[in-house]
Image 1: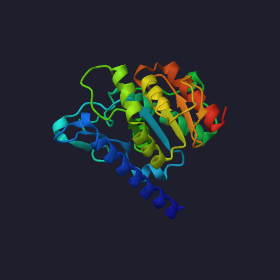
Image 2: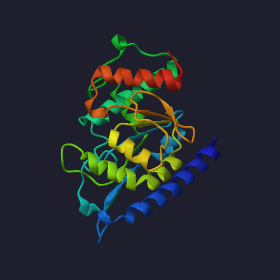
Image 3: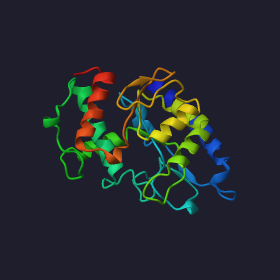
Length: 246
């Protein structure tokens, strides 16, 4: 098992370097010094040691200073630059809540009913430390590697980057080998589908589909907009259709 994990880690590093080389050649990353967020597994060792590997695909990273050049997600992921460790970011806290619920069902073999769910959307809840730990066992992939200084993503820009970057995103996914892919942005999903990564899949929400490589994928509403009811719907769909628990 240890040898297999080391082999997976080496393969991941190779695919990540190939993807990095692709992004460094992109014209809109700056003609003098390229700058972008090099994302993927937050902690590769923890990710590949996880019994259930989850990769979440979103539109674009949270802001950082382009003068920093290439920012590596593995280096200080909780810093001000990428904010994955900031519990007050809605996308972060809500996804970490989902990860906690998935792990509960995987471990206990049952689904928590809505009325029995602990409230997980605040950093002062008793499960928050576990949520944070589970977050470090996941991978995050943005189809657009450049930060956006606006409050909302530009749909056309996200689609164009997803389509243009499809080859490199596929390299990243080939290295990550996730058991479950969660994709939370329609234009990101459409751009990747039309770019050939998820060819043949439909952008139907909350329906688990199987990719050409045999991985489970679910398209969900953007996590920042989840109500607690939507969180339960996403969690239930994954538990029933991927974990096969009820």
